[in-house]
Length: 77
Image 1 (cartoon, rainbow, N blue to C red):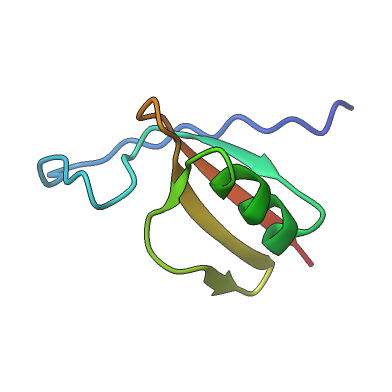
Image 2 (cartoon, rainbow, N blue to C red):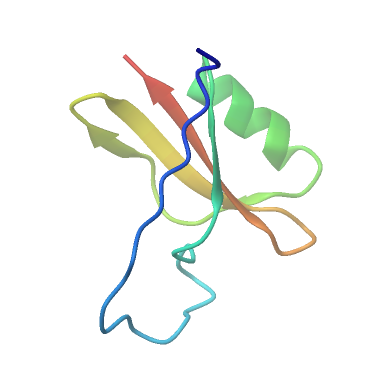
């Protein structure tokens, strides 16, 4: 088993894109230390899109890199 997960979601009645919010289509990376990884991506110019979200399985945050792509960084507990 590779540990890779592909999650496909269909949105019904989705609102128009808002550049301040993460898009429904994005890539997520599971990391060991969320705070450290956020600092590493912010160094070259990525910006957070909102606050870190905490949930039962861990926590995550969306970041937009300077080229415009959005990634989700997630740390599971």
